[in-house]
Image 1 (cartoon, helix red, strand yellow):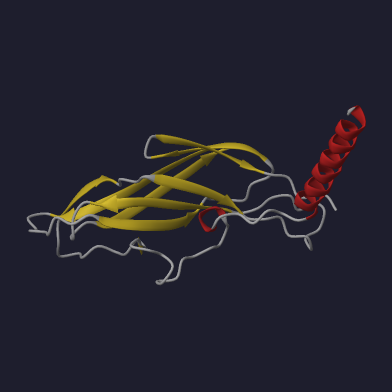
Image 2 (spheres, helix red, strand yellow):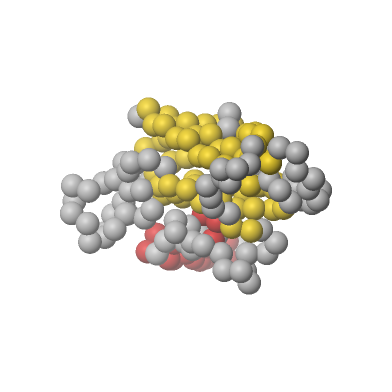
Length: 174
């Protein structure tokens, strides 16, 4: 009985080592929202519209508000294997997902500042003054790059007073 138990334990341990080697040998595929540079096509994006900030109509007056959002994905770029050893910094992009409250609201402005490992960003929306707009929930996604490049470490993004911690992982060892 103990021999059977010993063989089972050895087999389980061997399988665990092999499975671990497979994960270490290749990077696990990340979901699209977590991948630097990924953009949804119209077919795969579901009901969310990819929005960009466009200049406002100069003949129109607007109300400005803090942009509503549901989720934020901070996506550091992978380290390039062909880069010199001294290059240990990568760009970082952010994917914001939310819903706009009516047919007239647009993204208005993005303001950013960096203070070392702390980043502050303000995303605003605008709505035309006096406009009569259809009340319809408009799910959106918005991509933007954080300023500068980032070395491995822990960082904090404050987006519209919501704190998002993220980490830039060190380059993989060969």
